[in-house]
Length: 438
Image 1 (spheres, helix red, strand yellow):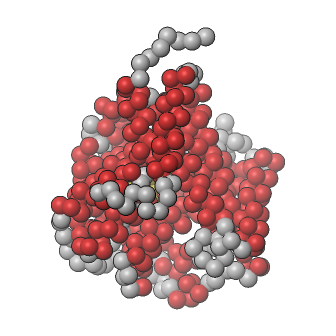
Image 2 (cartoon, rainbow, N blue to C red):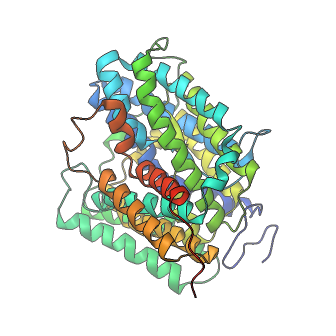
């Protein structure tokens, strides 16, 4: 493996720094993979709370800006902050339900206050999170990572089918998404050298162009957006602190932390980097502290993004400096709305075609953890089966199935990763170890 200004033919390690042109391309690739996820949360929360368009724009801009800052800190590190791993940070889907619930009853200022408290508590917990490592062996982390990948697959297929638009279910959506998927596979498997490492970005670009040719690309957002805008601090007013709001968000914060623990181990696996006390504590500290700071710039709580693990797994580019570049790009996008609008205009099927492959790769990396541990007997199979069954069952529960439960309970039960992860931890502690079988 070569270092310096040349690029490895297949795998680029965590601390390797390719030449700047390559770093930029790698960074853009990560942004393309996570952008839809970052903007989806503020869009969904803002729309549900019936905020005016200009306020939703502020939420999106703030989320992009703080996601960029969080990604930079996570990948490069500042003191004990940051895992110094190729981990991308963005607004968390697990917070959508509690934020909408809190905001509709108490207003957006109560959301911001609860996010500040939840983030601070998680940051404090990061000092002790390494103590639970013995409770998260490969049977637990592998299960969590599999659930992360499987839980994202319905979202990927929704994007492939057209997303929340008039394209949903239309043949053109499946054609464009299918084209992206096929291009990604062909580049990744049948080319050599540099090309497989940017297979995701190339496939998305081809899909973007195909969408333009097919006439389903709408660039109206780009025309309306301004070139430069600095977010105003506390645009929504001074945060308010309400105990019920804090309780609801704290449950989601725990689910977010559990996902970040799983993402950190999954990143270590695909990046060929052992995860120790410093990496785990550093990752959780950014998850918590930056969620609190995000409120200052009108952003929402952030967490690690699983889809970018899929990018690393597919491309073999694990350089944390490439991820740092993606953080810079996100930060700039938060300051240049017109640039953000260009990517926001990407039709959902384009992203969906690449997302399905990436999400599948995440689930595959979880299964790989069992193989690496060389321990997968009847006991482990039972733990995995029950945890995945409950995790996917609650994570994909039918509408209304949890509506009669307390709201603070539905927050965590609605997260398949949280349910499956907690189940795996409990079963691993309770079930007896049998004599090692042949």
